[in-house]
Image (cartoon, rainbow, N blue to C red; front, side, top):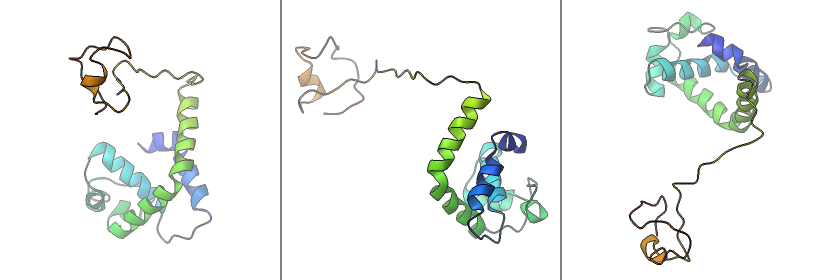
Length: 144
């Protein structure tokens, strides 16, 4: 997990984003612990306080995370929430670069999305099929 974290340069991203803020605890490592716990032993954020240091050793945390209090994980999550737009952009570029993905074209499957017509319920709007050849027995993802 830690190798992928470094490959996606999440450590660098968080350390640069945290450079302007003063935290007493290692927020980047706390975020890594939360991600690793969700991937390897899914449970609550509170459970991560018991998981880190006892069932998993998180490098960079004192005693591998043992004794790392829940408030520190919650503060790390607050920081993560604030940094989410920049993080999403960072991950997008890292993953497309890592996978050599060409994302200049995006396909979206709309075959199962059926519209409602003029505010009428689905079954009434398509009874005479004025908007296409949708069969009445098919389920709509929209509601009337």
